[in-house]
Image (cartoon, rainbow, N blue to C red):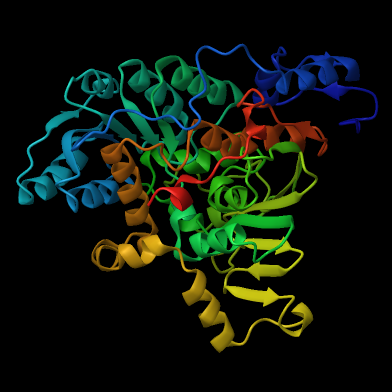
Length: 466
Protein backbone atom coordinates (compact mmCIF):
# COMPACT_ATOMS: atom_id res chain seq x y z
CA UNK A 1 0.00 0.00 0.00
CA UNK A 2 1.44 3.45 -0.87
CA UNK A 3 2.39 5.76 2.01
CA UNK A 4 0.17 8.76 2.73
CA UNK A 5 3.35 10.07 4.29
CA UNK A 6 6.65 8.26 4.44
CA UNK A 7 6.23 6.43 7.70
CA UNK A 8 2.64 6.57 8.92
CA UNK A 9 -0.89 7.53 8.02
CA UNK A 10 -1.17 10.81 9.91
CA UNK A 11 -4.25 12.78 10.97
CA UNK A 12 -6.80 11.38 8.62
CA UNK A 13 -9.78 13.59 7.83
CA UNK A 14 -12.90 13.41 9.94
CA UNK A 15 -14.64 11.50 7.14
CA UNK A 16 -12.01 8.80 6.65
CA UNK A 17 -11.38 8.41 10.38
CA UNK A 18 -15.09 7.86 10.98
CA UNK A 19 -15.40 5.61 7.94
CA UNK A 20 -12.63 3.35 9.21
CA UNK A 21 -13.75 3.55 12.83
CA UNK A 22 -10.62 5.32 14.07
CA UNK A 23 -10.30 8.22 16.52
CA UNK A 24 -9.72 11.49 14.69
CA UNK A 25 -6.19 12.90 14.36
CA UNK A 26 -4.36 9.91 15.85
CA UNK A 27 -1.31 8.38 14.15
CA UNK A 28 -1.76 4.94 12.63
CA UNK A 29 0.61 2.25 11.49
CA UNK A 30 0.06 0.77 8.08
CA UNK A 31 -1.13 -2.56 9.51
CA UNK A 32 -3.93 -0.82 11.40
CA UNK A 33 -5.20 0.92 8.29
CA UNK A 34 -4.92 -2.25 6.20
CA UNK A 35 -6.94 -4.19 8.78
CA UNK A 36 -9.68 -1.55 8.70
CA UNK A 37 -9.71 -1.43 4.91
CA UNK A 38 -10.08 -5.20 4.74
CA UNK A 39 -13.24 -4.90 6.82
CA UNK A 40 -14.92 -2.89 4.03
CA UNK A 41 -15.33 -6.00 1.90
CA UNK A 42 -16.66 -8.11 4.78
CA UNK A 43 -20.11 -9.57 4.14
CA UNK A 44 -22.66 -8.90 6.86
CA UNK A 45 -25.08 -11.47 8.25
CA UNK A 46 -28.38 -11.26 6.35
CA UNK A 47 -31.38 -9.82 8.16
CA UNK A 48 -33.89 -11.44 5.81
CA UNK A 49 -34.27 -13.04 2.41
CA UNK A 50 -32.83 -11.52 -0.75
CA UNK A 51 -35.06 -9.05 -2.57
CA UNK A 52 -33.65 -9.86 -6.01
CA UNK A 53 -36.68 -10.29 -8.25
CA UNK A 54 -39.01 -9.22 -5.45
CA UNK A 55 -42.67 -9.45 -6.42
CA UNK A 56 -45.54 -7.98 -4.45
CA UNK A 57 -49.26 -8.23 -5.04
CA UNK A 58 -50.46 -6.00 -7.89
CA UNK A 59 -51.56 -2.50 -6.81
CA UNK A 60 -54.31 -1.30 -9.12
CA UNK A 61 -53.79 2.38 -8.32
CA UNK A 62 -50.56 3.13 -6.45
CA UNK A 63 -51.06 5.57 -3.58
CA UNK A 64 -47.97 7.78 -3.48
CA UNK A 65 -46.44 10.16 -0.92
CA UNK A 66 -43.63 12.56 -1.82
CA UNK A 67 -41.01 13.90 0.59
CA UNK A 68 -39.19 16.92 -0.85
CA UNK A 69 -40.69 19.39 -3.34
CA UNK A 70 -37.59 21.38 -4.21
CA UNK A 71 -35.61 20.41 -7.31
CA UNK A 72 -36.79 16.93 -8.29
CA UNK A 73 -40.04 16.55 -6.38
CA UNK A 74 -42.25 18.79 -8.59
CA UNK A 75 -41.22 16.88 -11.71
CA UNK A 76 -42.13 13.58 -10.08
CA UNK A 77 -45.45 15.08 -8.99
CA UNK A 78 -46.33 16.16 -12.53
CA UNK A 79 -45.46 12.77 -13.98
CA UNK A 80 -47.64 11.02 -11.42
CA UNK A 81 -50.51 13.36 -12.24
CA UNK A 82 -50.21 12.42 -15.91
CA UNK A 83 -51.31 8.83 -15.17
CA UNK A 84 -54.31 9.16 -12.82
CA UNK A 85 -55.64 5.66 -13.45
CA UNK A 86 -52.30 4.16 -12.42
CA UNK A 87 -51.33 6.36 -9.44
CA UNK A 88 -52.75 8.84 -6.96
CA UNK A 89 -50.85 11.32 -4.80
CA UNK A 90 -52.24 10.92 -1.29
CA UNK A 91 -49.73 12.95 0.75
CA UNK A 92 -46.94 15.49 0.22
CA UNK A 93 -44.27 16.89 2.51
CA UNK A 94 -41.64 19.60 2.51
CA UNK A 95 -40.19 21.47 5.46
CA UNK A 96 -40.90 24.71 3.56
CA UNK A 97 -44.59 25.59 3.49
CA UNK A 98 -44.15 27.65 0.33
CA UNK A 99 -43.12 24.47 -1.47
CA UNK A 100 -46.18 22.49 -0.39
CA UNK A 101 -48.40 25.49 -1.19
CA UNK A 102 -47.01 25.62 -4.71
CA UNK A 103 -47.50 21.88 -5.15
CA UNK A 104 -51.09 22.14 -3.96
CA UNK A 105 -51.84 24.71 -6.66
CA UNK A 106 -50.88 22.06 -9.22
CA UNK A 107 -52.73 19.26 -7.46
CA UNK A 108 -55.99 21.20 -7.19
CA UNK A 109 -56.01 21.65 -10.97
CA UNK A 110 -56.09 17.88 -11.19
CA UNK A 111 -58.82 17.57 -8.55
CA UNK A 112 -56.49 15.91 -6.06
CA UNK A 113 -56.48 16.90 -2.40
CA UNK A 114 -53.67 15.03 -0.67
CA UNK A 115 -52.75 15.42 2.97
CA UNK A 116 -50.08 18.09 3.50
CA UNK A 117 -47.18 17.95 5.97
CA UNK A 118 -44.80 20.84 6.48
CA UNK A 119 -43.08 23.18 8.90
CA UNK A 120 -41.08 20.77 11.08
CA UNK A 121 -38.05 18.58 10.41
CA UNK A 122 -39.95 15.42 11.41
CA UNK A 123 -43.24 16.09 9.59
CA UNK A 124 -42.28 13.40 7.06
CA UNK A 125 -42.25 10.77 9.80
CA UNK A 126 -45.86 11.45 10.69
CA UNK A 127 -46.76 11.31 7.01
CA UNK A 128 -45.21 7.92 6.21
CA UNK A 129 -47.11 6.30 9.09
CA UNK A 130 -50.35 6.80 7.16
CA UNK A 131 -52.20 3.69 6.04
CA UNK A 132 -53.16 5.18 2.65
CA UNK A 133 -49.63 5.08 1.18
CA UNK A 134 -48.10 2.32 -0.93
CA UNK A 135 -45.00 4.13 -2.21
CA UNK A 136 -42.87 6.91 -0.75
CA UNK A 137 -40.77 8.98 -3.14
CA UNK A 138 -37.81 10.66 -1.43
CA UNK A 139 -36.38 13.75 -3.16
CA UNK A 140 -34.49 15.46 -0.35
CA UNK A 141 -30.82 16.40 0.23
CA UNK A 142 -28.53 13.38 -0.04
CA UNK A 143 -27.77 12.90 3.63
CA UNK A 144 -31.47 12.41 4.46
CA UNK A 145 -32.06 9.56 2.02
CA UNK A 146 -31.11 6.60 4.20
CA UNK A 147 -32.98 7.45 7.39
CA UNK A 148 -36.11 8.38 5.45
CA UNK A 149 -35.93 5.26 3.28
CA UNK A 150 -35.30 2.95 6.23
CA UNK A 151 -38.13 4.41 8.30
CA UNK A 152 -40.59 4.29 5.40
CA UNK A 153 -39.82 0.62 4.71
CA UNK A 154 -40.25 -0.14 8.41
CA UNK A 155 -43.74 1.34 8.10
CA UNK A 156 -44.46 -1.16 5.32
CA UNK A 157 -43.99 1.22 2.40
CA UNK A 158 -42.10 0.73 -0.85
CA UNK A 159 -39.58 3.49 -1.46
CA UNK A 160 -38.05 5.19 -4.48
CA UNK A 161 -35.10 7.40 -3.59
CA UNK A 162 -33.38 10.07 -5.63
CA UNK A 163 -29.67 9.75 -6.41
CA UNK A 164 -27.46 8.90 -4.66
CA UNK A 165 -29.42 6.39 -2.63
CA UNK A 166 -26.83 6.66 0.19
CA UNK A 167 -23.62 8.55 0.90
CA UNK A 168 -21.95 6.16 3.34
CA UNK A 169 -21.08 2.47 3.41
CA UNK A 170 -23.06 2.03 6.62
CA UNK A 171 -26.07 3.67 4.98
CA UNK A 172 -25.87 1.29 2.04
CA UNK A 173 -25.96 -1.71 4.35
CA UNK A 174 -28.86 -0.19 6.31
CA UNK A 175 -30.95 0.04 3.16
CA UNK A 176 -30.09 -3.51 2.06
CA UNK A 177 -30.77 -4.99 5.49
CA UNK A 178 -34.07 -3.13 5.87
CA UNK A 179 -35.30 -4.04 2.39
CA UNK A 180 -34.53 -7.69 3.07
CA UNK A 181 -36.04 -7.64 6.56
CA UNK A 182 -39.27 -5.94 5.44
CA UNK A 183 -39.45 -7.41 1.90
CA UNK A 184 -40.17 -3.94 0.52
CA UNK A 185 -38.93 -2.47 -2.74
CA UNK A 186 -36.16 0.11 -2.42
CA UNK A 187 -35.26 1.59 -5.81
CA UNK A 188 -32.87 4.40 -6.63
CA UNK A 189 -34.38 6.77 -9.19
CA UNK A 190 -31.53 6.77 -11.69
CA UNK A 191 -33.29 8.40 -14.62
CA UNK A 192 -30.35 8.02 -17.03
CA UNK A 193 -31.03 4.28 -17.22
CA UNK A 194 -34.23 5.14 -19.09
CA UNK A 195 -32.73 7.45 -21.72
CA UNK A 196 -33.41 6.75 -25.38
CA UNK A 197 -29.69 6.38 -26.11
CA UNK A 198 -28.98 4.27 -23.04
CA UNK A 199 -31.81 1.81 -23.67
CA UNK A 200 -30.79 1.60 -27.33
CA UNK A 201 -27.29 0.55 -26.28
CA UNK A 202 -28.63 -1.91 -23.70
CA UNK A 203 -30.81 -3.46 -26.38
CA UNK A 204 -27.82 -3.81 -28.73
CA UNK A 205 -25.79 -5.40 -25.94
CA UNK A 206 -28.57 -7.91 -25.35
CA UNK A 207 -28.70 -8.67 -29.08
CA UNK A 208 -24.93 -9.33 -29.19
CA UNK A 209 -24.01 -6.34 -31.36
CA UNK A 210 -21.07 -5.38 -29.13
CA UNK A 211 -19.64 -8.89 -28.81
CA UNK A 212 -17.59 -9.45 -25.67
CA UNK A 213 -17.65 -6.33 -23.49
CA UNK A 214 -14.25 -5.19 -22.22
CA UNK A 215 -14.42 -1.66 -20.80
CA UNK A 216 -16.66 1.37 -20.39
CA UNK A 217 -16.64 5.01 -19.33
CA UNK A 218 -19.27 7.10 -17.57
CA UNK A 219 -19.23 10.56 -16.07
CA UNK A 220 -21.02 13.46 -14.50
CA UNK A 221 -19.49 16.47 -16.19
CA UNK A 222 -21.76 19.44 -15.57
CA UNK A 223 -20.72 22.98 -14.67
CA UNK A 224 -22.74 23.65 -11.48
CA UNK A 225 -20.76 26.56 -10.01
CA UNK A 226 -23.63 29.04 -10.31
CA UNK A 227 -26.14 26.55 -8.90
CA UNK A 228 -23.96 25.50 -5.98
CA UNK A 229 -23.32 29.10 -4.89
CA UNK A 230 -26.99 30.05 -5.35
CA UNK A 231 -28.92 30.65 -2.13
CA UNK A 232 -32.09 29.16 -3.58
CA UNK A 233 -31.10 26.32 -5.94
CA UNK A 234 -30.27 23.68 -3.32
CA UNK A 235 -31.83 23.50 0.14
CA UNK A 236 -29.38 25.03 2.64
CA UNK A 237 -26.81 25.01 -0.19
CA UNK A 238 -26.17 21.39 0.78
CA UNK A 239 -24.31 20.50 -2.39
CA UNK A 240 -21.46 22.98 -2.07
CA UNK A 241 -20.94 21.96 1.54
CA UNK A 242 -19.89 18.49 0.36
CA UNK A 243 -17.03 20.13 -1.57
CA UNK A 244 -15.74 21.64 1.66
CA UNK A 245 -15.93 18.43 3.67
CA UNK A 246 -14.62 15.74 1.34
CA UNK A 247 -12.86 14.76 -1.86
CA UNK A 248 -13.71 11.87 -4.18
CA UNK A 249 -16.40 11.05 -6.72
CA UNK A 250 -19.41 12.76 -5.17
CA UNK A 251 -22.03 11.96 -7.84
CA UNK A 252 -21.19 8.74 -9.67
CA UNK A 253 -24.53 7.20 -10.51
CA UNK A 254 -25.66 9.21 -13.57
CA UNK A 255 -22.74 7.95 -15.62
CA UNK A 256 -22.24 4.63 -13.87
CA UNK A 257 -25.82 3.35 -13.74
CA UNK A 258 -26.34 2.72 -17.47
CA UNK A 259 -22.80 1.36 -17.83
CA UNK A 260 -23.39 -1.08 -14.97
CA UNK A 261 -26.50 -2.31 -16.73
CA UNK A 262 -24.64 -2.81 -20.01
CA UNK A 263 -22.05 -4.91 -18.17
CA UNK A 264 -24.58 -6.97 -16.23
CA UNK A 265 -23.37 -5.89 -12.80
CA UNK A 266 -25.09 -8.05 -10.15
CA UNK A 267 -26.24 -10.21 -13.06
CA UNK A 268 -23.13 -12.34 -13.56
CA UNK A 269 -20.43 -9.76 -12.79
CA UNK A 270 -19.73 -7.37 -9.93
CA UNK A 271 -17.55 -4.40 -9.01
CA UNK A 272 -14.37 -5.75 -7.44
CA UNK A 273 -11.81 -2.98 -6.80
CA UNK A 274 -11.46 0.76 -7.34
CA UNK A 275 -8.74 3.37 -7.29
CA UNK A 276 -9.64 7.04 -7.22
CA UNK A 277 -7.68 10.27 -7.59
CA UNK A 278 -8.52 13.95 -7.87
CA UNK A 279 -6.88 16.91 -9.54
CA UNK A 280 -6.04 20.07 -7.64
CA UNK A 281 -8.92 22.34 -6.60
CA UNK A 282 -9.17 25.76 -8.24
CA UNK A 283 -12.56 26.32 -9.86
CA UNK A 284 -14.69 26.91 -6.76
CA UNK A 285 -12.13 29.10 -4.99
CA UNK A 286 -11.76 31.33 -8.03
CA UNK A 287 -15.52 31.49 -8.54
CA UNK A 288 -16.05 32.39 -4.88
CA UNK A 289 -14.48 35.80 -5.61
CA UNK A 290 -17.25 36.57 -8.12
CA UNK A 291 -20.27 36.04 -5.82
CA UNK A 292 -21.96 38.57 -3.55
CA UNK A 293 -19.88 39.72 -0.62
CA UNK A 294 -22.56 38.68 1.85
CA UNK A 295 -22.44 35.09 0.63
CA UNK A 296 -21.35 32.55 3.23
CA UNK A 297 -18.95 31.20 0.62
CA UNK A 298 -17.44 34.48 -0.60
CA UNK A 299 -13.65 34.20 -0.90
CA UNK A 300 -13.77 30.57 0.28
CA UNK A 301 -10.31 29.00 0.19
CA UNK A 302 -10.79 25.67 1.96
CA UNK A 303 -12.63 23.59 -0.65
CA UNK A 304 -11.07 20.14 -0.56
CA UNK A 305 -12.73 18.50 -3.56
CA UNK A 306 -10.51 18.50 -6.64
CA UNK A 307 -11.90 19.93 -9.86
CA UNK A 308 -11.79 16.52 -11.58
CA UNK A 309 -12.04 13.13 -9.94
CA UNK A 310 -11.19 9.96 -11.85
CA UNK A 311 -12.28 6.66 -10.36
CA UNK A 312 -11.23 3.43 -12.07
CA UNK A 313 -13.22 0.27 -11.29
CA UNK A 314 -12.24 -3.29 -12.11
CA UNK A 315 -14.95 -5.95 -12.18
CA UNK A 316 -14.78 -9.57 -11.11
CA UNK A 317 -14.63 -10.59 -14.79
CA UNK A 318 -11.69 -8.26 -15.43
CA UNK A 319 -13.50 -5.45 -17.21
CA UNK A 320 -12.71 -1.83 -16.36
CA UNK A 321 -14.86 1.28 -15.93
CA UNK A 322 -13.65 4.88 -15.76
CA UNK A 323 -16.04 7.14 -13.83
CA UNK A 324 -15.39 10.90 -13.86
CA UNK A 325 -16.82 13.71 -11.74
CA UNK A 326 -16.35 17.40 -12.62
CA UNK A 327 -18.92 20.04 -11.72
CA UNK A 328 -16.77 23.17 -11.92
CA UNK A 329 -14.95 23.22 -15.27
CA UNK A 330 -16.50 25.37 -18.05
CA UNK A 331 -17.06 22.51 -20.47
CA UNK A 332 -20.18 21.10 -22.14
CA UNK A 333 -22.32 18.63 -20.25
CA UNK A 334 -21.36 14.98 -20.73
CA UNK A 335 -21.95 11.57 -19.22
CA UNK A 336 -19.47 10.12 -21.79
CA UNK A 337 -21.50 6.89 -22.07
CA UNK A 338 -18.72 4.92 -23.75
CA UNK A 339 -18.86 1.16 -24.19
CA UNK A 340 -16.27 -1.09 -25.83
CA UNK A 341 -16.73 -4.60 -27.12
CA UNK A 342 -14.95 -6.88 -29.55
CA UNK A 343 -17.48 -6.06 -32.28
CA UNK A 344 -18.55 -2.46 -31.60
CA UNK A 345 -17.75 0.75 -29.75
CA UNK A 346 -20.07 3.58 -28.71
CA UNK A 347 -19.25 7.02 -27.39
CA UNK A 348 -21.76 9.67 -26.38
CA UNK A 349 -21.93 13.48 -26.48
CA UNK A 350 -22.52 13.34 -29.38
CA UNK A 351 -23.64 9.75 -29.81
CA UNK A 352 -21.41 7.85 -32.25
CA UNK A 353 -21.12 4.18 -33.12
CA UNK A 354 -18.34 2.17 -34.72
CA UNK A 355 -18.81 -1.40 -35.93
CA UNK A 356 -16.12 -3.93 -36.74
CA UNK A 357 -18.31 -5.14 -39.59
CA UNK A 358 -18.31 -1.69 -41.24
CA UNK A 359 -14.86 -0.58 -42.40
CA UNK A 360 -13.12 -2.64 -39.77
CA UNK A 361 -14.26 -0.21 -37.08
CA UNK A 362 -11.82 2.51 -38.17
CA UNK A 363 -14.52 5.15 -38.66
CA UNK A 364 -17.75 6.25 -37.06
CA UNK A 365 -20.84 5.10 -38.91
CA UNK A 366 -22.14 7.49 -41.54
CA UNK A 367 -25.37 9.24 -40.54
CA UNK A 368 -27.56 6.97 -42.68
CA UNK A 369 -26.07 3.79 -41.20
CA UNK A 370 -26.14 5.22 -37.69
CA UNK A 371 -29.85 6.12 -38.00
CA UNK A 372 -30.58 2.66 -39.37
CA UNK A 373 -29.06 1.14 -36.22
CA UNK A 374 -31.03 3.55 -34.02
CA UNK A 375 -34.25 2.54 -35.74
CA UNK A 376 -33.56 -1.19 -35.75
CA UNK A 377 -32.48 -1.47 -32.12
CA UNK A 378 -34.41 1.34 -30.45
CA UNK A 379 -35.91 0.07 -27.24
CA UNK A 380 -39.64 -0.60 -27.79
CA UNK A 381 -40.78 1.36 -24.73
CA UNK A 382 -39.77 4.60 -26.46
CA UNK A 383 -42.13 3.74 -29.31
CA UNK A 384 -44.85 2.52 -26.96
CA UNK A 385 -44.81 5.75 -24.93
CA UNK A 386 -44.00 8.14 -27.78
CA UNK A 387 -47.06 10.35 -27.30
CA UNK A 388 -46.79 10.45 -23.50
CA UNK A 389 -43.08 11.22 -23.65
CA UNK A 390 -43.72 14.16 -25.97
CA UNK A 391 -46.41 15.48 -23.63
CA UNK A 392 -44.59 15.00 -20.33
CA UNK A 393 -40.85 15.14 -21.10
CA UNK A 394 -38.37 15.44 -18.26
CA UNK A 395 -34.70 15.37 -19.31
CA UNK A 396 -35.69 14.48 -22.85
CA UNK A 397 -38.32 11.99 -21.69
CA UNK A 398 -36.25 9.72 -19.46
CA UNK A 399 -37.89 11.08 -16.30
CA UNK A 400 -41.35 10.17 -17.53
CA UNK A 401 -40.28 6.71 -18.71
CA UNK A 402 -38.73 6.06 -15.30
CA UNK A 403 -41.89 7.03 -13.42
CA UNK A 404 -44.09 5.12 -15.82
CA UNK A 405 -42.04 1.96 -15.35
CA UNK A 406 -41.95 2.31 -11.55
CA UNK A 407 -45.72 2.66 -11.29
CA UNK A 408 -46.53 0.15 -14.04
CA UNK A 409 -44.43 -2.57 -12.39
CA UNK A 410 -46.27 -2.01 -9.09
CA UNK A 411 -49.61 -2.02 -10.94
CA UNK A 412 -48.78 -5.40 -12.49
CA UNK A 413 -47.00 -7.00 -9.55
CA UNK A 414 -43.69 -7.22 -11.42
CA UNK A 415 -40.19 -6.85 -9.96
CA UNK A 416 -38.92 -3.29 -10.34
CA UNK A 417 -36.32 -2.63 -13.03
CA UNK A 418 -33.70 -1.69 -10.42
CA UNK A 419 -33.44 -3.09 -6.92
CA UNK A 420 -31.73 -2.01 -3.72
CA UNK A 421 -28.52 -3.83 -4.73
CA UNK A 422 -28.22 -1.77 -7.91
CA UNK A 423 -28.74 1.45 -5.95
CA UNK A 424 -26.14 0.76 -3.29
CA UNK A 425 -23.59 -0.68 -5.74
CA UNK A 426 -23.60 2.50 -7.81
CA UNK A 427 -23.81 4.86 -4.82
CA UNK A 428 -21.09 3.26 -2.68
CA UNK A 429 -18.55 4.54 -5.19
CA UNK A 430 -18.96 7.89 -3.43
CA UNK A 431 -17.66 6.91 0.04
CA UNK A 432 -15.14 4.34 -1.25
CA UNK A 433 -13.64 6.86 -3.68
CA UNK A 434 -13.14 9.33 -0.87
CA UNK A 435 -11.13 6.82 1.14
CA UNK A 436 -9.04 5.82 -1.88
CA UNK A 437 -8.36 9.45 -2.80
CA UNK A 438 -7.34 10.50 0.68
CA UNK A 439 -5.06 7.50 1.20
CA UNK A 440 -3.00 8.16 -1.92
CA UNK A 441 -5.23 6.47 -4.52
CA UNK A 442 -4.90 3.03 -3.02
CA UNK A 443 -7.09 0.14 -4.27
CA UNK A 444 -10.30 -0.26 -2.28
CA UNK A 445 -12.35 -3.47 -2.36
CA UNK A 446 -16.09 -3.34 -2.94
CA UNK A 447 -18.40 -5.09 -0.49
CA UNK A 448 -20.78 -7.70 -1.84
CA UNK A 449 -24.22 -6.41 -0.89
CA UNK A 450 -25.85 -9.41 -2.61
CA UNK A 451 -24.02 -11.92 -0.43
CA UNK A 452 -22.93 -13.98 -3.43
CA UNK A 453 -26.16 -13.83 -5.42
CA UNK A 454 -24.59 -11.57 -8.08
CA UNK A 455 -23.27 -14.70 -9.81
CA UNK A 456 -26.66 -15.73 -11.11
CA UNK A 457 -27.69 -14.62 -14.58
CA UNK A 458 -30.98 -12.73 -14.56
CA UNK A 459 -32.64 -10.47 -17.11
CA UNK A 460 -33.07 -6.74 -16.83
CA UNK A 461 -36.70 -6.01 -16.08
CA UNK A 462 -36.84 -3.27 -18.71
CA UNK A 463 -35.80 -5.87 -21.28
CA UNK A 464 -37.99 -8.75 -20.13
CA UNK A 465 -41.29 -7.34 -18.86
CA UNK A 466 -42.82 -4.68 -21.09
